[in-house]
Amino acid sequence: MSKAFWYNNDRKNICGIKIRKIRKEKHLTCKELEIMASLEGYDFLTQNAITKVELGMRFVPDYELAIFAKLLDTTVDELLSID
Image (cartoon, rainbow, N blue to C red; front, side, top):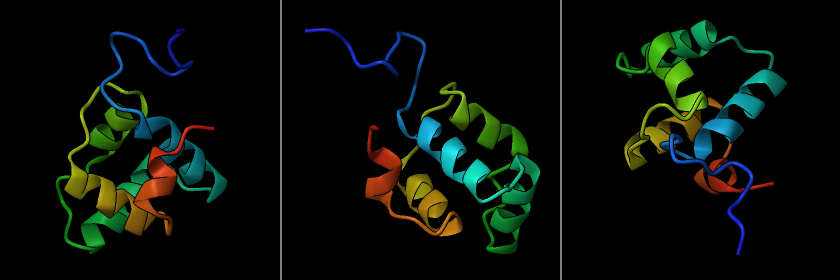
């Protein structure tokens, strides 16, 4: 069985690809998403952290996945789906 297209030994999450796609569809920059997170009280979701998530360089705990879903007006299931 072959591995999925998004899988490689360096990737630490599968949601980053979808987070980036949805963020771009909403015409948001990482900085704008950081500001949205900060206004909601999630100061730990910095521009740097968001970029690392999107690039698969950082693990994403379940509570952060829920925060991303809320900020992007989507569901956790959608963020974990593979197209």
